[in-house]
Length: 100
Image 1 (tube, rainbow, N blue to C red):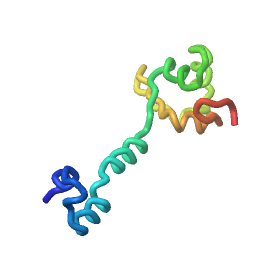
Image 2 (cartoon, rainbow, N blue to C red; image 1 turned 30 degrees about the horizontal axis):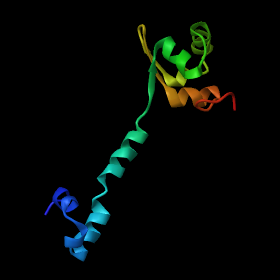
Image 3 (cartoon, one colour; image 1 turned 60 degrees about the vertical axis):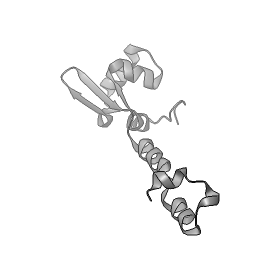
């Protein structure tokens, strides 16, 4: 019997062994949520930096040019990709807050 069939089976019809197996292995949703929580969040372009820091586009350009968040930026030509969490950390800010 596979996990999907076991999950569909009423608890009162399960043996003790099936119930314990399901408790141990049947919670695959939790694993999926843990994987998505670990995925990095990215913003794109100077407008993405502006949204991330809740500032104007000219201020976002100055932040980028200052070099403070260079480790969080990957740029190829005109394409700018910024690791949001790392940029906030490098700038000394927490998400949604002011300077720490």
